[in-house]
Length: 319
Image 1 (cartoon, one colour):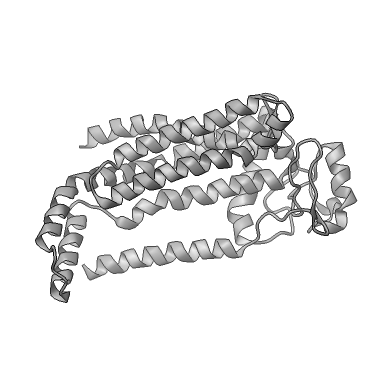
Image 2 (cartoon, rainbow, N blue to C red):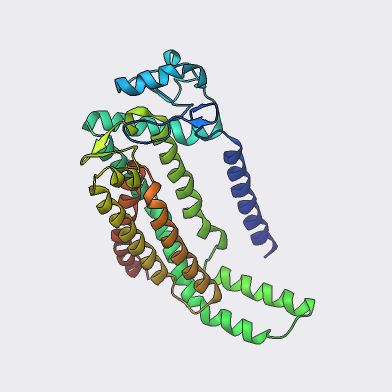
């Protein structure tokens, strides 16, 4: 029992340490002239001071050249986006090395091959989701085991109701941990998907902001660096469809996840409330997400819905 607790404690500490290290490293830095944020006149996008490669658009190149002294690396010292590799730049940080540069490199190479950065972003997002599928299967399996375990958990709760002495609390904890062991449930593993997806989401955002060839690209008349709010304000109403797709796919994905977690437990109820809040927050945030991130989000959530059916079939065969 003590060994199990120690292992879980070590995993939690490892996750906290890695997250802390990532937070200490550099992120996107806005290009500023004094206090004024410099924006792309054509898209309204705030420009980045620590871009990873040279812009290909002539007007954008001239804008960056004008503020060359504000860039972290001089424009002339930056590689072209076509020749960019993860090792080909002075920026050195854990965040950039592990996430941004490799992800940006993959999107760029595939984008040049397909001649469309938008399609590249969606394919890379889909590939990541497929790679993470075994983790998702394990997570869903644990959710199913949690449902099976719930009656026994409730029995323990009733057994120790109103007992607050140390011996009773210790016995309750031991019996609960025995149940986790019996049903092969690791409480820490439930955080794994969120821990993986969040850095990837922010890495996509970083890559789009810091690699001009990506945010200069277009998909179905939508600029990949432009936000829906800016696009709609400039009479490109296809961005309305983009917002609708973000909200619908997010709702379907979260709803299906909540069904898998369905239970009368207090934790399950809290998760439902958090999911509802997340749907609301994503709906508001969708107005200010760059188009490339919106496409990534739609594909990830759209595939998640399909994935739930696939996982359900896998679990039915295993049970």
